Length: 88
Image 1 (tube, helix red, strand yellow):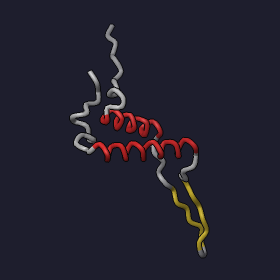
Image 2 (cartoon, one colour):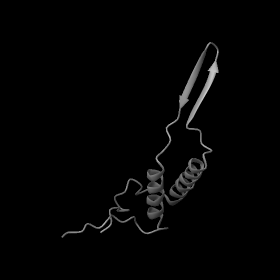
Image 3 (cartoon, helix red, strand yellow):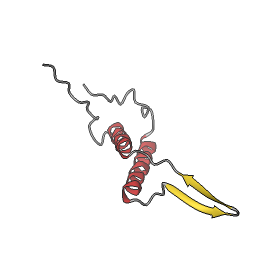
Image 4 (cartoon, one colour):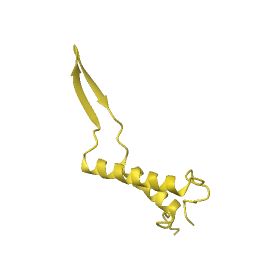
């Protein structure tokens, strides 16, 4: 039994072109995060004081999981599977 059901997913009901655009965007974000090209923290001086801005950086594991869910919704890959429990 799979832990991900495409009929009850939050992605259910989204049009295929929207899902494909989302997938492309998520994959680009993952590449940017992994390559270090996305800024996570920036500091600058303006006028009479220093300012700091911090951007939230998505957890890579969660981003990969969301990419996999979108791919499953599109039928590109099988639905993600849950770990199988072992009883002794």
